[in-house]
Amino acid sequence: LANTVWAYATAGVAADALYAAVAEAAVRGGLAGFNPQNLANTVWAYATAGVAADALYAAVAEAAVRGGLAGFNAQNLANTVWAYATAGVAADALYAAVA
Image 1 (cartoon, rainbow, N blue to C red):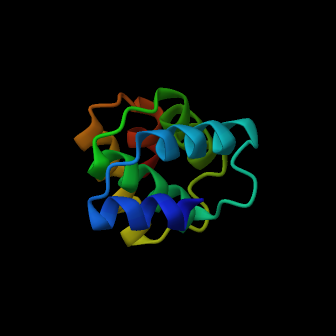
Image 2 (cartoon, one colour; image 1 turned 90 degrees about the horizontal axis):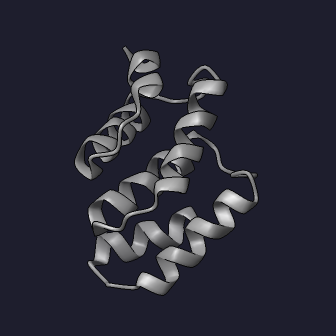
Image 3 (cartoon, helix red, strand yellow; image 1 turned 180 degrees about the vertical axis):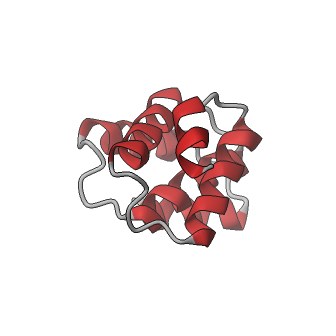
């Protein structure tokens, strides 16, 4: 899922139905199977594409903070924080954890 939305965002392809379906599936599945890079790439893709996905952003932030940012490297952290800032999504707990 992460690679799919990343590819669409990178290519600049508009695919609202795809983004909606991926967000719903990811949240419904509790982000199972998503590693830190997948989490970062997913929110990066949504921010880059300008697609709103409040439940997805909330789930990713919660998962990252709950895990203590374990496994996130500097690039993952930078991409994640950039995505939230670019999308204008409040994520105080995430920002505090990264700081």
